[in-house]
Length: 210
Image 1 (spheres, rainbow, N blue to C red):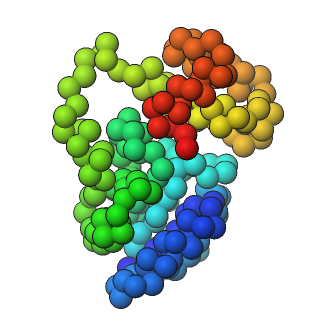
Image 2 (image 1 turned 30 degrees about the vertical axis):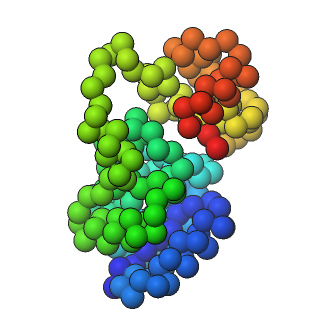
């Protein structure tokens, strides 16, 4: 039996996953987490064959969380389940140690296949991402502006694009408002963007926000 830990801060997503897993005779939901701290705590107290991991939960998340999970259990299978279908995002999490990447727009059958493959020690890449990777042939000149950002700068950029203010971002990332402002200034310079409105348009045009 595949014991799954579902890590997502949206109840409707967790509910949908549990409904899918309920029809899989070889899968059981052994735990749920709504933020990075709960994920690490669950791993400390229990054993799971697979973590279904959302990238944008409160507190520790994304690449930082994947690295911490790997620090606790180097062999823990991690399947990232994300709204993002950007190749660069997938590359970041796979390089950090995730075992697979599947988007929230995937078909139910593909999700089932991904769960079983990653839980058994294999790797899985969403078809959309796999096609992007297959036909990728970029020079450094062709790299999209947001692909040059650091992990922290990318996360700050996404929060700004969602309409978050400096104070809220600082509280979410456990850093000072001054540090957030520094990240914002650097990322906007790297991306050659002059305003929040322009940043929102960029994020929407590139499928980085819903």
